[in-house]
Amino acid sequence: MTRFGLALGSGGARGLAHLGVLEVLEEAGLAPRYIAGTSMGAIIGALFAELQDAQAVIEKTERYTADPRFRESWEAFVQEPAEQERTLFDELRRSIQRRILTLRGFTSPSMQSAQSLLEPLQQIYRVRRIEDLALPFAAVAIDLYSGQPRIFRRGDLVPAIYASSAIPAVFPPLSLDGQLLTDGGGPYRVPVQVCRDLGAEFVLAVDIPSFAAEGGEFHRGIEVLLRSDQIARNRLNQFVLREADFVVQPRVERFHWASFCSAEEIRQAGAHAMRAALSDLRRRLRRRGSPLGRLSAYARRRLARERPIG
Image (cartoon, rainbow, N blue to C red):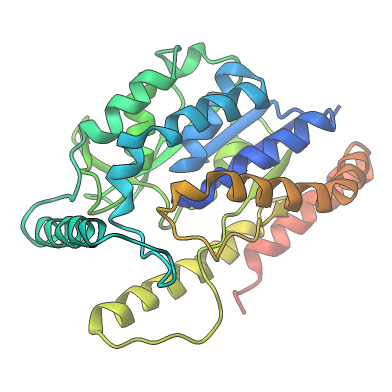
């Protein structure tokens, strides 16, 4: 049988769509044998590599994201709809939170403490070392000094997941082995090649879209700067996804990247996207099992590397 692997992309709260993807794959009897993840993809991917049970991963993640202390640490990042009813106290509290976060963003390396991410991670995993997980797993971070990826395939699990998930300016980078490591979701948003290096012959990439090609208002220089960076990352991601054998993209752009209060809707969006693609995925997997199919896939990947991004 074809060695089937998952490359789970970054995306903040939008990455909870991975839960729905895993749920549908398990129902269909298509359990991955290899998992690579970046940021939220690393958090969820490591849980599945430990538990090998999509429902158990969903339940554990839901308890994690439903914790009021967890949600409170993220709610200041989210712009609520104007029609949502809020008390004067709520407005004042959120205004103060945003001002504090803005001040921290200019005066310190991060808006949140490392412990605000490390403590929840230490609670959700029982396995302490990557090589003790039930499935081969890798997490991807970026070294701020060299600009090169740091691929975690062995060693302590929680620091590896933290490094992969430390969103720049939100959480402080991790200093480890002479490197300064942060969220790998910039140039390594979906770790397709990392999954293949683990041993996967067929890589299903789950890409969490962050780019909406639509009009918007850019009143401040920082908004233009962030949009330009987003465009560059999106074009790089298009090139990376060409290396995948199959790509699923849950439609979650409408959700804010920190909107963990929308966890159930986001999970359902992931499940819907995977169900819609399931018959095509089965067909591709069957074709890949033949010698001709393997040769064709190899030629397609070579062509993808040589073709310029258009």
